[in-house]
Length: 231
Image (cartoon, rainbow, N blue to C red; front, top):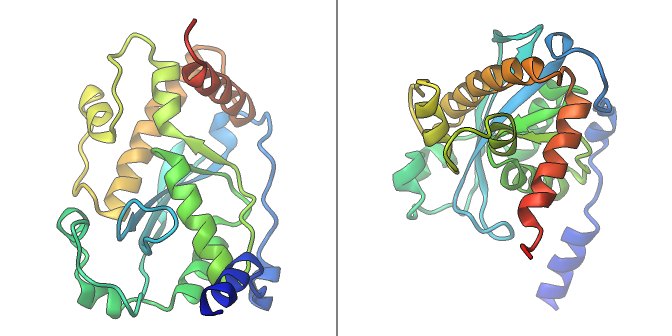
């Protein structure tokens, strides 16, 4: 019975009234890339299990008017009362004491979505970040995330077909001689991803792709080709 009640709570979460005041997401459009506001996000989690692991930290930075706007940054550790150190602690370095002293998840997520506003999001290996963020918002606020997510891990090989078949952020940073101040730290990784995104957007413009809507269409088509079984 306890498991059934927990399943019902997660499948039909109560909507937090505060989430109803969040702005509706804007659709990807054909404005030039230099006129877009884009939120680059990175999450740190207790592991890679999409259903069981917890969201521990959010880092984000804004690309606006063709540049990284360092006055618009977001960084937050979320309190998770039952969090224990595990293998991922050695990677992200967030100690259980820091998690215990973090902000209440509902308040942190509300603040983050207010920071996002109606802008699309971008991450490296975006499906993981998107799923973990969607799950946290649903469980904490009863909020359904509808914002568009672009994946720099797809845009990079799409726009740089001459590059080796890199898979990780470290490889792409090295390829373009970029450096992250501190890897596996949400804010530092978000900033490094934003720097990579600006290089990719420059390449996109040279290839005649100058808006997020077309970039997303091309990226989705590229992804389908990669997943299609070879004949």
